[in-house]
Every structure is written in structure tokens, then in C-alpha cells.
Length: 473
Image 1: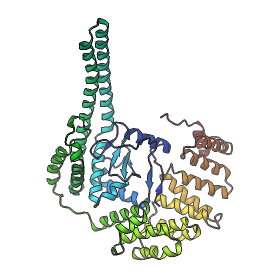
Image 2 (image 1 turned 120 degrees about the vertical axis):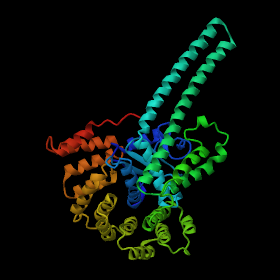
Image 3 (image 1 turned 60 degrees about the vertical axis):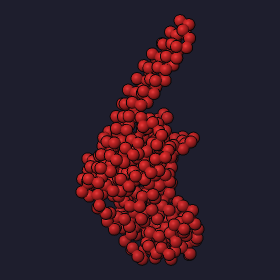
């Protein structure tokens, strides 16, 4: 299931997740992979995310050994896919990592993405966000003291009628204090970036993975940024200058005994399939057909062409190519899921149920697939008969997807069809809460609360929503 969505078990609402990421991207507190600050879109208020079971599972498999090597395997770090075609990744706290889908599209090998994850993990394991906040506080204090001194000197010059000399000195202190504070903070950030590079190499060595992909990625950015940065002041850069960074990393990377280790054929195939899927869903179909021409008979190429074709054609024209994928890899849950997704899109929900049941059977831990199956069950012609099955899938899925607005909306529909009105109202309240519609959330919660026994789990959940106050911006 590939679509835009916002959800994280670490944030109470999607607005909190958006604000945390956006605040970091527009300030100094996002530690990103590329050279320089991450360019937040002008007038941006929110960041779009992509949810897809196959892509998320691949990233989890990439990250798991790295997190373990860093001692973070018990912290349940969430990896979010940002709907941005640029190459970047960043962290904003110790529990959330953000990776642009463009990072996957521009990475030829799994090892390149794993190198990015290893670098960002270095920031998390090193506590760099907390250290940066502390350094920023110190820098602001130093700048404030310089500003006070500058104002006093400037004021003294005006009072004494001194004119330009003392006045210029005061203005110089004002500017110099701000400049020195900025340089101090950026120097601290450059140190953190170098530390994250070193940590990434350690994690890759500990997991016996190549450092070559990470090196190639940095070399690419060094080439891209060489012209624009060759005259830049190195002391005003948030990351080490490309040439310096490459020299340091090249020595560390090539010293690794696993430098020439290749990704497994299976992992490379999964990587290529995810890139093909992202292209098939997100690119203009003609771009997809040009990138994956009919002369390319590989499985990823056929995956991409099938998706692009299904976006343009109806079920009758598209089903044969989807069934051909399933025939080639009958144990691939995401090929079965693809059939179910397009059946729902084409308004044939009842026909989506069997392939989605098969997908859940093959990948029972995929919560997003269970939510899609529930959607098909409730959208069929005999949805009342399938309400119990839908509720079962949704309750399992929402243990993990605790802020999935669509999941709660479907749960409300399923409860409603069983005449479980209190549960339906509570699920509607939760759906509205995670859609950031607080007025509607509180209204449904108030109604649900009157139907639950006082002190029961449902009553307490409704009461929490009624009394919840969103954090200020």
C-alpha cells in the first residue's frame, strides 16, 4: 500500500510529528546527511510522508543490524519515508529517523542506503541532538552578552558625542558577537558530523558490511557541491567541507576489511523492486516506461511497468501482468497486496479480499496490509458479515499503528455495523484525533464516554481525548 499518510507511535498526533520535523528542518537542530542545511520548502507548514509496507520493511531490515551494533536495538526507532525526491536523511530526536524516498531512488545498491542509516544512527547514539541544543543555548548566551556590551559601548559613544569611532566599535561588537556565536555553534556541528562518520564506519565493520557505499555517496555529494562551495568560508559550514570530509572518510572506509563486500543478490533484488515500485507509483507513467522499457525483462522492470499501467488502465487490461508477477513469486506478499490495492481502487473491494488475505497469511506482521484487508472487507457487498474479521485485523494492526487515522475510521465502521455504538464513537474520536480535528474528536469522545462504564478502559480513553490539549507551536 503506497500512499501519503502521517503517523508515528512516538507522537500523540500527526501535527506533532509534522511540527517536530519542520521545526528541525528550518533551524539548527536537524542533523542531516548531506552537505549543508536541509532546504525546507518555502512557506512549508507540513511535510508529506509515504507509507508502504514493502518499503518500510526493507528499511527496517537495513537498519536493524546497524541499530544493534550501536546499542539502540531496544529503543524502537521509527524510520519515516519523506515524500521528497531529493537525496537526504535526518534525525530530530532519539526515536525518529527520516529518509527521503529520493535517497532510495538515487541509491544503486542497498549498501549506499545502509551507509546513510549508519551515519544518522551515529547522531542518535552520540546524543548529538541534546548536545547541539546545549551548545545552541550557550551560543545564544554568548551572543546576548556581546549584544549587551555592544549596546553599552554604542550608547556611551552617543552620550559622549564621540561620533563614529565608539559607535562603530559598538556596532562591531554587536556583529562580532553574533558572528562568533554562529561560528562556535557551526564548529560544534562539524565535529558532530565527523563523529557520525566515524561511528558509521564502526557500525558497518561490526556488521561486516562494506563501507564503499557510504564513501560513494559522499564522493557524489563532494562532486555536486565542489563548485558552489570552493569559495565558501569553511568556518561557516554546518558540515565539514566536501574535500576534507572525503579525505577523512576515504582513509577510514578503505581500511575496512569488508570494503569490497557485496550486497547479497536477494537484498539487491529487494532494493531494486522497491525502487521500481516507488517509480511506478510516484513518477509520470511515461517516465516509468522510459526508465523501464519493454526490452528490460527483469522482475523490477516488469513491477514498475505493471504499476504504471494499472494507474492508467482498468482491471481487465492490468490483471494479467499482476498475476504474472504472482506466478513468478507466489510467496511474495507485496505482489498479492498489489492486486488487492488496485481492486479497491477500481471499486471491486470484494475481489480484493482473497489476494489481501493471502498477503496477510504470507506477512502476518504487516499492519498496513491488515488495514487494507479490513478496508476491502468493509467495502464489499456483504460487509456486515465481514465486520468481525475486519475488527480482528484492525485491532491487531492498531497495536503497532497507534495513530493511523484511517484504521480507526474503519474500526468505527465495523463496530457500527455490529451496533456497538460506544466502541464506534470512541474509534471515531481516535480517528479525528489523529486527523488533527480536535473539535470532532472531543465531540465523539464526549458521546462515547456516556456509554461506557465509569473507569472502564473505553471510558478512560474517551476521557483522555476530552482532556487532551495539543502542544503549542
